[in-house]
Image 1 (cartoon, rainbow, N blue to C red):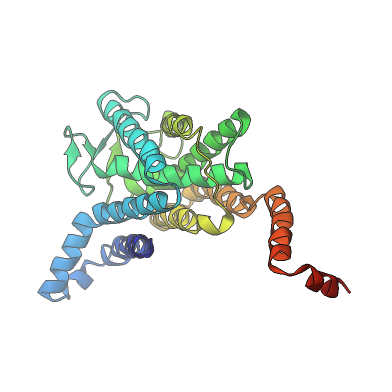
Image 2: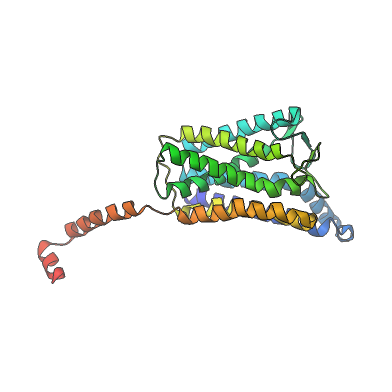
Length: 312
């Protein structure tokens, strides 16, 4: 278990550092090509590799960190029960979207995100749906559960809705950053009414996330998945750093109009994520039930005569 935790933390650190490297390249180096020209040959090669494959690297490390976290905290069965639906359903949704325009609008992927499945969707895209979808749903579920492992159907619906909302809020800063800046990774073939994005893109994100989260919730229905606040550090870090990556690019590379969708994303994503993590604590009933058991255990260890002395 210790080795698993070390691997998980290594992947998380690599995920954050690779995003920081990409952010520095996009915002500091690309606008100043003379800086690249002044680098030694090895530096120029490293920069070119980073710009060409940086998107692939940070997504792979993000997916690995979240998968290891899920395996460590939820178990192999629960991890696969989320990973498989999220990857295959999101891939199907993306293939349908790039072929027909439904449900996201008419768009196509450019280079920079790795090998394209069927020549349409980079293999890293379903992986990003998995790891951001899982952390969004885990945060939502833990907050709605309030320390309880099993959820009734009302809380299940609430967790799915909140998880899909957190995922969609991330897209409010991701799509402008990845499609409308000087180095885009995908392009919309139609000018959307919502800051260059079609409204159906947001509906597609909400719907796709809700579908695979619902499938995972069905498979998890008999599992007692109880995560305390202290166990939500990795999901919250992954959510916030990925959010910050898109938000920083959006507000620094695009005009002042994009402060509105960024602020909306903070209101609908960052604030609820932090609040949900805060309220995801052990249930008071569990603590209350543990006190008599602890008292009985202590009495069993102390001779009866000593108990009388201690009471005096």
